[in-house]
Image (cartoon, rainbow, N blue to C red; front, side, top):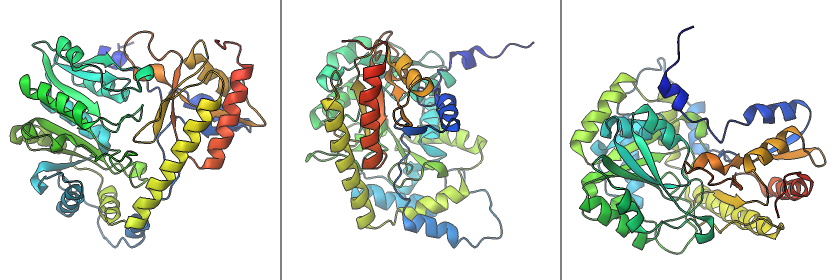
Length: 399
């Protein structure tokens, strides 16, 4: 039998999806599975986007340009200008979701053996995309005790080697919900400038910042404009995860030319998705305010509820719609599996993402899970009840 690739064997399994078969089996047995494991909002897609599908009048569903529809990129320019992100149409490449933007950024910037420094816990697929590019993610741990704040900048500097090509941040952060401050962003900028690095900045959750401080984009940092590679997606802000439309934004001309080679190789981003995304950018202010306010209320409800359960702790996330929770268990991976395989309370169980999959440092996240507050408050209330009862019954509870 032929051997499969070492690259494939090195790819980490998704911590978000690896327990899906167990959840399906539980549902087949009639158990309600409350899914807090994945960032799939239950809020409606903007009517503008849905109406674009209903009114579609085309005789051919053709390839779009490899860099994306010009009309969509023009709408995106207007959208970014609302956030004082000063980019032009030619700076934007439409991608098949934010994931492809990360992959293409890595493939275009990194050679085999090159390194990227990433604060952890971090979105697990960053590691997978780095492996695809033959590069190495070098992580620097943040801690739940400090609210997942940026680790000391000296720690970053200690990790820089001749193979270091960039720093990657997610702001607001997935999985922690942490929002980097102006001071932290300035420290990152100074390091990027000093060592002539790329700054890969995943900013797909920019709408969901819960502090009075202004949102800080990597493109707001003076002096490194040509070193920034911004990653974006419409999936979360418009509840359109399934249309697979994202963007890679850069002012680095040679990098853009490199990225375009990969874009041409995959031909085009999704035509129908782009049509929906373009229409959705015109979503009303009422829609955006509704989604924002709903997440504010869900955040408070879930965080307050978690911290009332004996032995549980989570800091207050200041962005996105995720939080990392410390549980009084011996092993969160085992606990999450046990909840799906062996436990239910009044016909319901809870599906969470073990946080160990968001770390690369051995042993970290062992008693942590990520929860996404993307469900209505009735479901969140039931999830909190189920979690509390599960912790009482779990044989591996740690005091």
